[in-house]
Length: 126
Image (cartoon, rainbow, N blue to C red):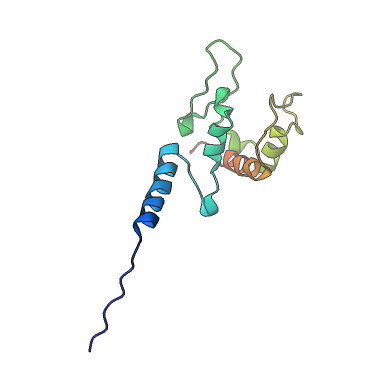
């Protein structure tokens, strides 16, 4: 006699819950890595870094008005600095041209590390 293959059963409630959670992440544009962590680009946008900074290589346009003081585009910033430096810079512990970053990063230490690591990857392709 042949054994019947096992059928996986989902309750309506669990299926609806799963679809709802997936829909939430898709609708909010949340990007994740393993463990549901946000990626650097998501943290950059959520932290409103794009209010001042643009990253043309990532299709991020800074919101600074034309004619105002404008920080340089960050598309190639990773070829100039390492993640450790970005972490200190964003926490106002490092200087650049005798100045500190305008705003201190307010996110979690994990988000700071993720953002700094992502910024280090921003290098123009040759």
